[in-house]
Image 1: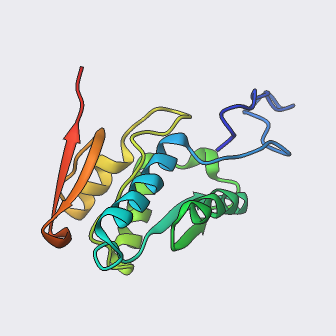
Image 2: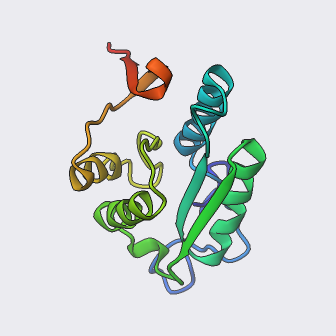
Image 3: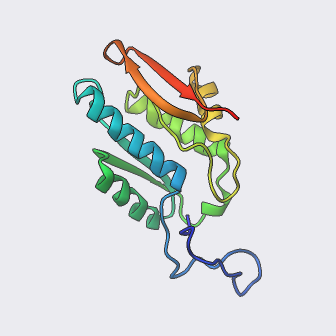
Length: 159
C-alpha cells in the first residue's frame, strides 16, 4: 500500500496511480492489529499467545510491510506473491487466501485491521469468518483473553 503521507500521482497511461519508486507502508489499521497481538502476548504470556504470524499478499515489495510487522513483534511473516496484480485483489480473494493460511498454520484466532485505507471496504474479516464458520467481532476497542485463551472478550465502542 502506498504510504498514506505520499501524494499519489496518476501514471503516464492515465490508468492508475504511479507506484514505481513510491514509498509503501503498512495500512494503519493493520498496524493496530499487530500492536494488539503483541499486547495480548504481553498481558497473557507466550504460553497463551504462542505465535504471531503477519500475512500479506501482493507484489514482492510487500515484504517491506512484513519486515515492519516483524520489527513490531510478530514472530513470523508470510507473503503470498501475486505479481503485479495488487490492484486487482478483491476482499473475497484475500479472505480465501487467509482461510487457507489459517487452516495450514492451524491458527485459532485472526486479528485484522478494521478496513483498508485504499477502498475502505471493511469486508475481508467478515468474509473470512464466514468461510471458516467462526464467530467474529468488528470494530474492537479492547480485546481480552479469558480462561487461558479459551474465550475472547471484545469491547466495542459506539457513538
